[in-house]
Each structure stands twice: as structure tokens, then as C-alpha cells.
Image (cartoon, rainbow, N blue to C red; front, side, top):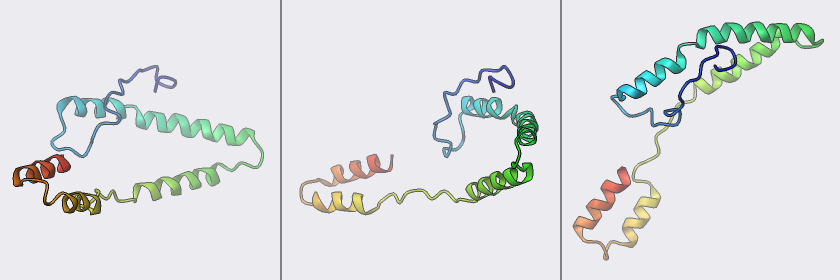
Length: 115
């Protein structure tokens, strides 16, 4: 956005956990600001891509755009699968420490594991 819109966006929440609900107000504000110029950027970049293809023989705008579209569509259709909370690694830890942990320690480990 700094190149095409002359805007600097604070990226502090770029790698935040967006699965949490409700989202904190500062994350909502970040998302609003970060996506505000996307439609404008789409138009500018499509125009630039068209001009680039026109200047280079053998590059077809529709062909490149079609490939990009299919790749993006495939990525967007990928379903996120949350890792299994109590998978084999957790079970191995609990089984290996069954005799060493008190009931309170087992509960604490479970709470920490889920966290």
C-alpha cells in the first residue's frame, strides 16, 4: 500500500490469532484499515498487469490472470483444520507420567496444553 497509495499501515496484528472471538477492537480497526484500499489496489494492479502483458510478446493477459485466479480459488477453498487438542503427543506425555503426576498436576497440564 505504501507504493500505490502512499499509506503506511501498522502491521502489528498481521500475525495475530484471528480465530479468537470476539475480536478485540484494535484488531477490528487493524482489519478495517488493512483492507480499505484492496478494491482500488485490485484495479491498479490489473491495469498494470495488462500493460505488462501487452509489452511482452507471448504473454496473454487472460492466460496469466486465469492461472492466478485458479490458484487463488484453490487456496481459498482450503479448509483450516484446527490441530487435535489431545493428540498422540499429549497422550504419550500423560501415559508416561501417569504415576508421577498428582491429580492436580494432571489437570494443570491439561489446562496448559489447551491454552
